[in-house]
Image 1: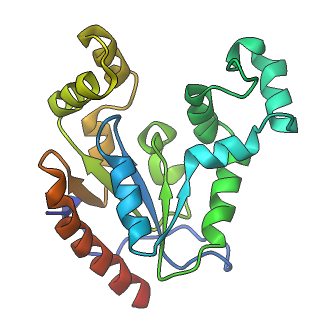
Image 2 (image 1 turned 30 degrees about the vertical axis):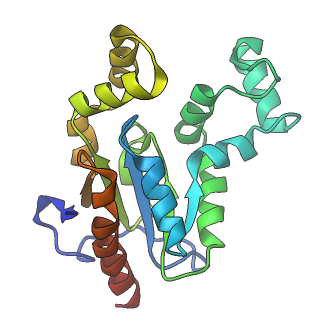
Length: 212
């Protein structure tokens, strides 16, 4: 079941100001590779909740032919480009938390969202510095799985060897670093069928906070 970490009472921590046009409640969603965060994204969307994706924001900021992409290539060379001349996925994710413009695109997407609350899906939120980098986030939800489960899922999903899978996990923030920025936790080391009930609880929490 989802939990609230650090003994915090919902809605009782200090908030940095954000634009008046923004939804009153924006939840930052993150999780390590193979944590199941993409599935959680989809379950929120299925409930009618707007989900702004950090990867999509980065793609918009550095789309083929854009000024942003030209600046990246000028700074780092053509090695950052994929064969189709777009920016590769890993570079896009790094850009989201290194470039204020990409963060602005994500923020603007949340500001336009309808509904009781919005989700900002940010895979590398812990690496970026958490709420310090995204002060307009009201809460941070971490999809949490042990590293052993991440490893098993990567091996099964991607068909890669153990050394590569371990390197992919090690390239991200540690589990402890993600937990340190969490307001809410969604354990996802069990069967997929267990997620809807946990999502129901979180959805109720966030709707109540939005209405308060």
